Image 1 (cartoon, rainbow, N blue to C red):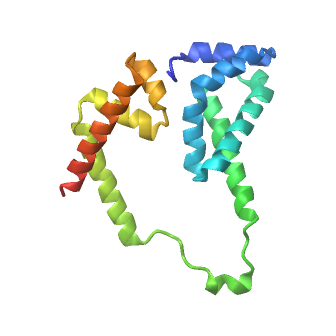
Image 2 (cartoon, rainbow, N blue to C red):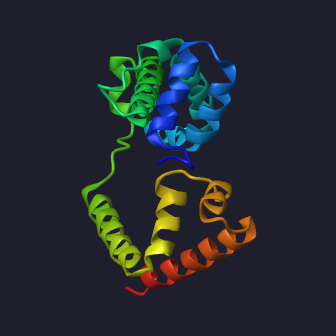
Length: 185
């Protein structure tokens, strides 16, 4: 389920898009934009470009809605594939424009993560996963939804049927707990 919309409802919205019903695009956008944006930004790592790509993604969804086949893919998987492919296409074209002349290769600094940094990052990620697993299930889900799945605080508050301020406070307290526990090592 994505932001309160079931896969069947999402399929229905895509069918309505294929028939040219504009209001379905607004509903689909509201239900899926945070998750698709998270996918795009993970590939591009550039917020402003990711915002542009998200808009392009919804244009592609509009133009290709008639081609969606519920028998071949879940609706969100289909949307996520379009978003991911759009981001990859952007990244390929973006980096092709930044080709360095061969004679200046020795002047280019290696930006790859060092082995020591990679090991340290993986250890920290493992420690974070361990600490997350120790949280109450509801708090763990809120953190994962907000920071790993790209859901907004508003989406979380709506899903939990709680005031926005309550969700923000709970997540802030949980983050402080996590920071303390991860930093204890």
